[in-house]
Amino acid sequence: MASPDGSATRVSDLDLPAFDYTDAELHGPRFHATMRELRARGWLAQTPLGFVVLEREAAAFFLRSRSAEFPGMKIAELFGIADGPLYEEMRRNILHINGADHARLRGLVNPSFTPRAAERWRPAMRGFMSELLDAALARPDGVGTVDFVSAVAKPYPSLVIATVLGAPLADAPRLHEWSNWVQRQFDAPTLIAERPRIERHVVELYDYLDALLATRRDDPGDDLISQLIAARAQDGDRLSDVELVNLVLDVLIGGIDTTQSQLAHTLRLLAEHPQQWALLREDPERAPAVVEEALRYEPITPFTARILVEEVTYRDVVFPRDTVLLICAHTANRDGERDGDAFDVTAAREAGRPLTFGAGIHYCLGANLARAELQEGLRLIAERVASIALDGEPAYEGVQGVYGLRALPLRLTAAG
Image 1: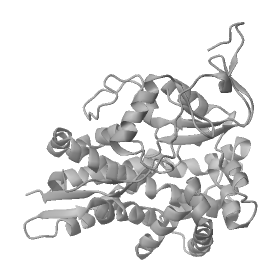
Image 2 (image 1 turned 90 degrees about the vertical axis):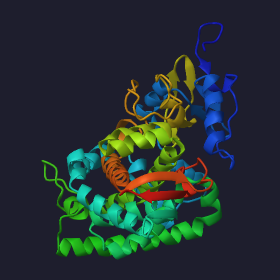
Image 3 (image 1 turned 30 degrees about the vertical axis):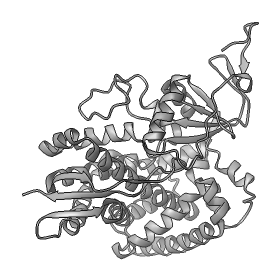
Image 4 (image 1 turned 45 degrees about the vertical axis):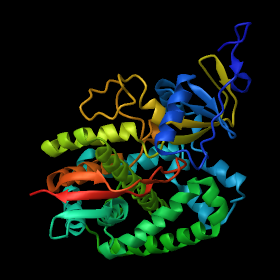
């Protein structure tokens, strides 16, 4: 991609295919076909706001680059968000904190988000999934025709997050509502149309978390908030009150819609691939492999935004400062894989872990907790449910922000 004289070429001078990821009809099979065709044309595409990075190696480069940051504050600037609770929440979100400040925060909180830390919540996860399946399979004949999203996928992570935070289980529906709306700050059309409502939910959530943190200070428990209050670095450094409440808020808004959507898509994929379901049903211990394949094949964050804070030259292409990039996990996860566009829970994937949770310093803080939730949920479903089948068409949401399902009608038959 160098110019005729051998110098680097500006990305704006390249002849790239156009791609509109805001298209409301871009989901399901059409989304897969569109991305497959786009990737076949190269590793870059152009959008109205910037460029899409389609290849795994390039995606990992920009996700790990210290020259690329999450563009949340640029979004705030573009939409005139310069003060108020939403501005403060965006400014303090760990996604928007970089450099030494980010390293300090991660150093204090990482011990609470290790794989070992996630292990202790697995019994609670199984308990919640068991209760939800009891309700879904409550008919005398053991057959349940349900919307899996509203019956299982939606309440499950809300109950888990409430338990992890030490919040009353009765508050789980409210936590879901707040998470769902505050998360929409990353969806530009919703931010434009519903900013007052998002702002109101931010205020309500801050008030709730302030009270919850005060309770945990007076009465520490065996929960994440109590751990974060007690967290100290070797030099005695600890989280401030402002840092505490914003980290808990980040865990909340990042840990509900995402897990809900990934679980729903995983059940959809298993219903659409009966042979894959049969393998999991035969051996529920395959659940971790099924989770990894679902994360690879249908990432619920198909695009992760970055903005360059300085000029970057990559592969003889110059990307100027302030260039906006969409890192496409959907196509990157397929690169380097034999039959990468096939959903196959038995395949020995060679390219490494999927980029669904990101890479680099902003790798998802709650990835281990999310994996544990998905694994325990799937394992119990495989133990309790003999067969699953679609009972209608899935209702897809858009691929902007969190790519979820509004509804997933399934017919479930109880085991035994």
